[in-house]
Length: 425
Image (tube, rainbow, N blue to C red; front, side, top):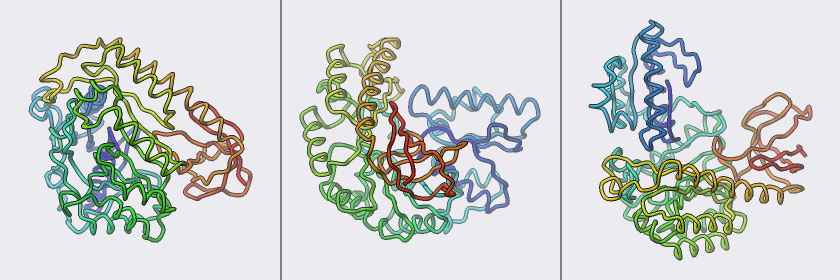
């Protein structure tokens, strides 16, 4: 099983792997040298780079198949959902292409009967102490550049009951940190209950025995619920961390992006949530090179990132996606090399911000969880960092048998651009 793309794909792969394992298959996940006779590739089709990675991965296994190393290849996920007809024509060596909602068809092809009561069960590919909890599919926002609604459709929430059942099962496996994900987590519940229920969901999750950290990702800034702010502030199990993709700050660009929020509202929102939760770490993402991003608009974005000093920042270059509003209505006006220059410049600005923020942590004490051991060091995270995408705390082992998946207190003794150095206390 090969999983590409976002954490939502990880969850889909884990559900599939549990069903396959229950049906008698032996599973190897993301191995660099798979000896499996059947390979299933869960693809991403969100932006150009991700699509390119998916195609290259498929072709590498097609080559392995031609050499007799593997017998069959199956492709699933977003790329397959969106470009199935083209892929079937261009890469006939693949034995089957499946969309994002084709779990029963994949299982049937591999002679495994779907067990509905076990759809909340997963074969974890993450370390045992943390897991992703996907609370909905699809998206209703309709941002001009985004193909997700074309791939996954409208927003569909999962029931509160099914999510709590899944979370309890994860806790029973030793999971201590739940990372709540969706295309927009704050939208949760509107379709099922007529109102946003994300705060209630987080509160219910926090009452599950064994769960110590709950982390919220992918929160849309427009319509952010006040009760969610209150829940994050008051609930000690909810990490003081939130992932809020802002995408831009220039009003014209935001309007062309169809973000539903302008510069003034964005700044008001950030100031409000920071005043309510002063210790909150904000992770955000920005897009450069979207149609309409003039040099002046970009300069405005640079100043915004420098002034508002976000804890974590990711940068994407605009990629024209077939079928989106932007692709149909805007010329891709910013040259590729200029997009890259802008992305690199923003990351240089954020690197300085991150270093300065990290310097302020020297001498402070934090609760951390150990994700793994590398040589003489424990690789840890604070509540202000999500796995895989954020920074780590490197702590020298002191002979007290520190173990992955356990919590410890650490004093910060040094700081780099994107990592911290600490000592156990």
